[in-house]
Image (cartoon, rainbow, N blue to C red; front, top):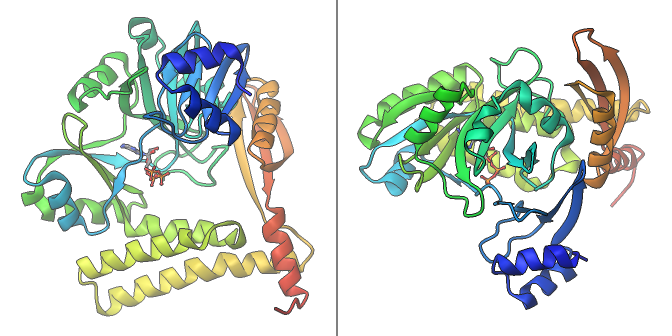
Amino acid sequence: MVSSHFRNILLKLGIPEERLSVLEGKGGLVEDEFEGIRYVRFRDSAKGFRRGTVAFENGDVVLGFPHIKRIVQLENGIRRVFRNKPFYVEEKVDGYNVRVVKVRDKVLAITRGGFVCPFTTERVEDFINFDFFRDYPNLVLAGEMAGPESPYLVEGPPYVKEDIQFFLFDIQEKGGGKSLSVEERLKLAEEYGIPHVEVFGVYDRRRIDDLYDLIEMLHSERREGIVMKSPNMKRIAKYVTPYANINDIRIGSHIFFDLPHGYFMQRIKRLAFYLAEKHVKGEEFDEYAKALGKALLRPFVESIHEVANSGEVEEVFTVRVKNITTAHKMMTHFEGLGVKIHIEDIEDLKNGYWRITFKRVYPDATREIRELWNGLAF
Ligand code: ATP
């Protein structure tokens, strides 16, 4: 149940009483707290408030980050989304989404699901100049946290060699969630020295060959893809490289039974559309086919061996924290997500940071492999 204080806030935001009760009944609204700041998280969308929306006790609201349309046929996708109009092309950085916002006197980092993330909240001051929030308390910085030392992802982009970094890609207003234009965002990022995703320039559909070249380049550099945005941020579309599709499959096949089949099918589909659009043939085609097959099979077979040898399906993560208590807060945070974590190692880096190594175990995937390996017939 949401307390009467939050009920009033949500009613004031225009969510009808009945809707609120239905949502509560389904567990769609969850009250939570971070270091004394109370908030309500939307697990489902409700009347313009997307999933991941957060309403704070002081009435501040941060809307859930919107879904970005995906295109799989680059040329035709661009024609449908942007027609003949120009659009900015930015890098799609491979990490996790955070919305950074100042509530009362604290700067908080919110995950896509609407949790205040203890790890990101502690680290965000390392990347963002907080003068920004002094001058613009009403704005939300949305960006990607990416790097090899991330609590949520096993890999980061190739150019983040250690630790983790923040890359800005959107600035939105609190409450209504309206995005600033790309130009306004770039200007503020520059003014406050906030690291930004790489901007490759302004393109339009007549420059499709340059975009194909850009995708080839990103693919060969093992980067995830691009996000295309009209200057006023009204039209946005994403497109990922064949590298990212195959790499996601490779990472996913390690925990094969823990992912929905659609995870693999979607990526195979995107790769097929790339190969078809680019008319990839002959040796190059064979290379893709081999890479896909290996990505699907090798980590899967390795996991089977691991379990057959009495091990478990697991992933290992390392993160840098300033306070060990943050690592414990992360444990609680993961518990809340229903994720099983073990801290394996805590190392004092002697520079004000601790390196925490933890293991995420996948009990369901492990059990499923074990049963099949042990001869379960069905
Ligand atoms: P959805 O389908 O709702 O967009 P998803 O998790 O399936 O969500 P992804 O395929 O990961 O989405 O792509 C969207 C995400 O890409 C964004 O939520 C954001 O975190 C991330 N991203 C990375 N770089 C950018 C960028 N330059 N502009 C916008 N988003 C970016």
